[in-house]
Image 1 (cartoon, helix red, strand yellow):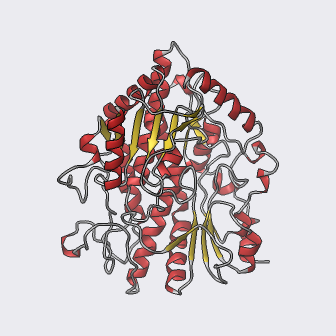
Image 2: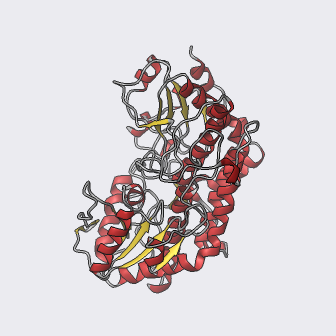
Image 3: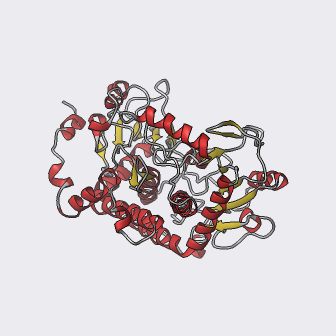
Length: 471
């Protein structure tokens, strides 16, 4: 019997239901948060619950994540391929797929190709793609975590029968528990038939960057480094404030940084509420709300997400960097001045994003932006998207990574991905409350996971409701 099989048989109940874990599970399970009994706005409650989930993961899973960092570093230094299919929202690897992603060290191969994988490779895996028997035959080292549409998450009994087969934990050498449920969303709202506000995206991003930070540190300990993607100028370690000491883990430093920035979302609630008001203005006047980004990751997050609103659609650029595919759940659309575009940024002055902004302006659309507005703490000279949109939120995060590691040519591990995710979902929570205020109590249509029993019936019911009302 392989090690991963013996690990799978170890009962988890003692760990999961002790101390803070039992409190977290009782609060998080299926998204119950007390509803209107809590006087805080929905957006604040959602952001608080996300921070509580991340804190539980750091407090209980850091040892597993550090062991994973050692495995990633060792496998890469051996010349093995480190495959990666890690849940970062409405799809795997969303935060690392853009070709020029700033702060991404060249360690991982996104996806998985059984024709190219070899004995002894590593797989950072939260999705069931490809034959796990094949992975096991090659004795790959597998690091896993649960996903809402898989049978390893809490709430297994709620899944459709065919989804119950999607289990990866028996094949994992290291398991990172996150308390994610199969419902996948956190917030109960009176009148909504399913919870709103997904959690897996930010959790996947934060855990990925925490492990990556220490994998880089461990390689540097041994005098090794890898290229780092992006357009940051080569760094001078003597001038950097966040130089990494190689003796101690740094994943807690990443966690503390991103948590501080997540709390600062509250300081931009004025901008977030302005975005929500503009979105509701659009849908109540017959317009649409689009979530845009150049490469499609944020666009995917804003369309068809479990726990997400039907009123937000996703749009991105084609291979020629043009925007052509205007769609909503009602079918093909003609863009108009009634529409709102929410531009998701990974850097403030991307030339394709600026071209897209010009396209939106020619149509007469309202345009807002979320994401970093600085490079290395400074606003770039010349044109930037945040300078030219109607509203911007994201002053707390930066384009580049946050750690300067000896031997690495650029800083690694940005926080902009998790912040972009959470600013967007905080905006969606505000949209829910704005619609309730302005429609005498109506709530917007929200998706239930189609992996759950009855999920497809709910899916089509929500689309019909959206077609009727526009939200």
